[in-house]
Length: 296
Image (tube, rainbow, N blue to C red; front, side):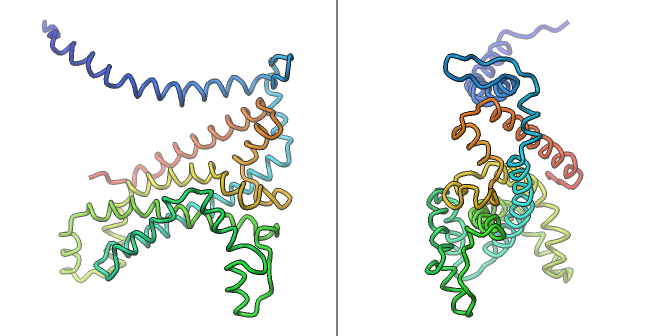
């Protein structure tokens, strides 16, 4: 009967001590806030000398009957359906382009990645100038074609699309870096073998590169889903959810409920729903795409 040596026990303790700081940070800033938010969603909002009391599912019932919440949820759904595929497709196209041996490749990589390093508030202010009626950059371009002036951020029909375009422009460069790194890690002999066999570029991409890029695509897609839900700063700068909640997203609605109207209990209920939706979508992505992911 074998017994563990003292040295193996010391190594185990050493390993756990190395993991302890990360574990403490994970519990303190991720798991504990999530559990505390879940508990707070079943209580009322404490106000002044009146403490919080147990209200059960009342906050969730209020949410179910809140038209602003459903408007924000609908907007967020359309926002996600537009930003996720558009930013991923644009990032992949840019990565494929700058991965080739073309003139000015370094400049193109820097230009594509520049929006990523800019603060979102700065990006929103830049696009606020673009969208300004009468003298904004977009108005100057459309004016050259004789088109009438249009308030892109003040029209319910175009406000959500305008902020969606800003998000795609901001995220595509960030996702491009991951695709570029994945492309550069592929074995160059694969391209040489495809060229010898006479395979076209599209055939090589669809049958060789794209399957090998699936781990990166899964990672990028999970991040794109999270980004589609956590967008709030450029909404504050560009539209503040207007006009008439046409561009209100869930996190901005959460911000208003929790910090503008100071209904922290209702805000906690919205947060719980957001976490549940994100967890469900993330698990679905992993299980549905796992068969198509090749890690070797």
